[in-house]
Image 1: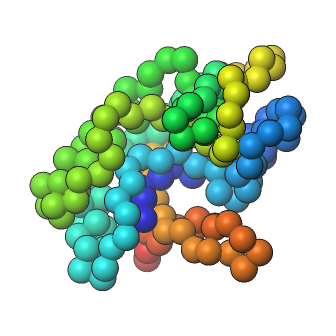
Image 2 (image 1 turned 180 degrees about the vertical axis):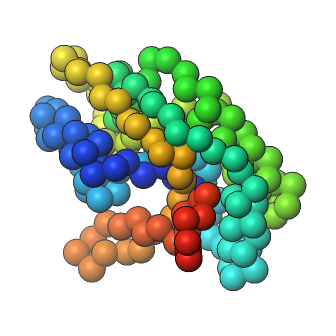
Length: 172
C-alpha cells in the first residue's frame, strides 16, 4: 500500500503522450498506473488500514500546481522519471505531515531519505535520460490524495487501485 497523488484525466493523457514519444527501452508504466507517491507503507492488515485512514484524515491539504519539466533516472533502481526543477512547498509539507502522522499514530515508518516528487514513466531503464525536448507539463492538484493498493493483473504486472481518498469527499 502507498499514499499517492493521482492525475486528472487531462494530466494523465499528457503524461501518457509524453511517455509514448520517448525512445524505446525499459518497461513502460501503464497509463492507468501513473501517479506521484507520497509515502510507501507496504502490506497492512485491517487494523493497520484503519489507522492509516485516521492518520491521513488529519492531514490538511490545498490545491497546488507542480511543473513537471525534467527527465531523470534513478540509476540504482533503473527508473526513468519525470519531475520538477523547482520545489512545490505544499507537497513537501503534506508528505512531512503524513509521514509524521503514520509514525506517531500507527508506528509505520514510511520511506526514509530525501523525497523527490516524480512520476515513474519506465522501469528497467539502464542508460542516461533521453535528451528530448520537453514542454513543461503542469499538474494541477485539487488537494486530494489517495491510499492505494496494488493488485496483480492476469496478463502480468500490477494495477493500482484507490482504497480511500483524503480529504474525504464522501464514502471511501
